Amino acid sequence: MFGSIRGTVLRIDGFTALIEVGGIGYEVEIPSTALNKLQRGSSAFLYLHHAVREDAHLLYGFLSYEERLLFRELLKISGIGAKIALALVSTLNFADLTQAVETEDVRLISTVPGIGRKTAERLIVELKDRLKRLPLPMLDAVQASASAEISALTTAPTPTQTADASVPLSARAVREEAISALIGLGYKETAAVGYVKAVYQRGMDTKAVIVAALAHIAQHNRRA
Image 1 (tube, helix red, strand yellow):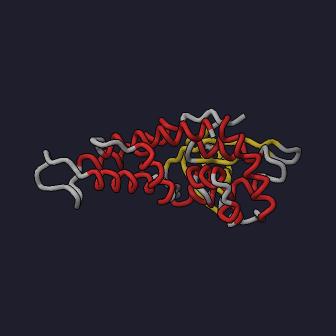
Image 2: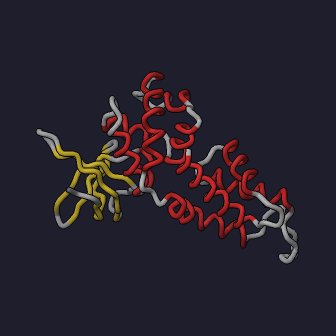
Image 3: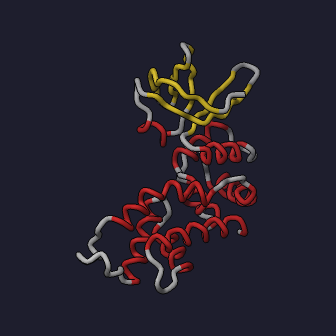
């Protein structure tokens, strides 16, 4: 079974990338989220899902390990095939889909091509339990993705900071910056506000609030 691929992108046709490795070209179906990050002639690395059928061997590629895990869990749900699973991963990022399942947002999931209301309702019921069992190093993964933004927030001057770096941000400014960081990671504004409100304590700086919020999110997902 193929688990990953690293090679040169020869061409992209629709949602299929032709990636050459050692003189052999592999056709890999990719979600739309990867389209803007793969360029012809450039090197690429993808996590693979290898589907074996009687008439074909199909490869599906993902930019992150979490995307592939989610794709595989979706395939286990009755009525969800590779085409719909790929559409889900393409339309909703991990954070949005997780939040939609937690809040039972049938309307949002129904916006995905090929998914009607009944399918969305069944997906929510089945995926809710599956998400709890995913072996995701979720906190570490999200924290790694957020590291650049956290660094920028805690080191670069912002409109709410004074010229004197020794003067701390106000509590309101800290909360606003933490909320902005979570929104930048893909969380809805209302959810980001709720997460920050749940963890903020007087005296915390922006970085501490973001890290605490991410830990809160990971803990909530495990217990929900």
